[in-house]
Length: 534
Image 1 (cartoon, helix red, strand yellow):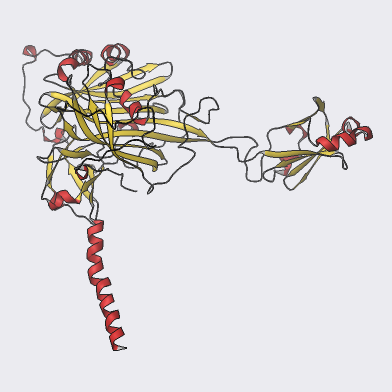
Image 2 (cartoon, rainbow, N blue to C red; image 1 turned 180 degrees about the vertical axis):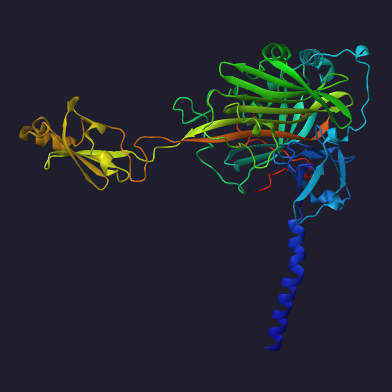
């Protein structure tokens, strides 16, 4: 017994002393952070987070959330965080804690402009907003890469309903771009390193179905989404109007270099900054047959490089009640545009400057869609009761008596002859319809043949009948969701030229369905910035 007690004691020692050390190592895989405004603590979406001197990094989520691998903390690395309109900030990873969400505060750049430099207005030509945008269009061939390059990044698509993530798919992939003089859909190739369907978030089988404009079971209200034969990621790339500046992309940007200036109104906002680069901030607006556009474009003052475009289109319908359509606590501009109507889609694109050439940083494409749910209250069967001389209509739930006994709520046909209803009775979920002209249906000479065909030749139209739960017969509910597709660059490779011709993504096949994958030896250098759960 003493020997057994000693063994049990040693087991307890292992459980209470050694096991916690193992668990701590497992829990510290990522450091969780949230980028927020130092003044009002509102989350900062799409901030750029880089590991100093390593060329690796991530973009914060719409709610400011970000994950950083614990490995970088062990290496003693430092984060460099930047966002348009804010002072850049460096934070040693040793300052962050693995057991909690670390709030990282950025200070608005405008708060630091205490020293005002006066410039003689007569010596400086003041350009209009439209002229600035036009110059930016003209300088695209100079400011963007027309030679091959590549970048590794984090792709995801998901839906949001009532502020909750659904159907989250994630991937790490490398994009090989031949340069802006080559049509993107034809020339760009993608190699998938890793992909997964994230089972930690709910799966909504209704929202995940394909768009269906024939039966209208899943549609984008007042708009359509053209995939041009591509999968989720090619659809996303198509909506990068800067990369596809000389082809038609989406309404009302259309062909960026020609139609943006022609189709929109522009107004200058106070200038802002990214790092130390001064930027024009220009409002984009348009009204067309009930549609409204609200957006911004950020252009460098020195070389007229386009750093960022925010572009949202709102539809004709006003929402019945205003709801935030993205993650809670987001500071995205679309949560502020309460009077523009129903959001149809929003595209946010940002580029980064590397050796005076602008390369992709991230793209976020969000469109709203509606799903028609099956009716909750429907008739499921009808039969002829010859013995009792009546038609019996069966519902999937108990009908409300005062609705069910109204003759005007039914139309009854037998073999294409309309019958008048004499009386109605209700028995649980069965409505019993007694016709006036019983001989037409229940004459003795017909009973034998009718008993064989049962309800054949009977048609009953039902309307305005509710069940005891208040559901109206045949009425379908429409549920609103938002679909997101996003790509965040983690490492840029400006001079990629030679690549092998094997194992590229099949563009016509869904990303998460039997795609070829090839994981490089340094796969651990990249990671999935899975959203933080609420």
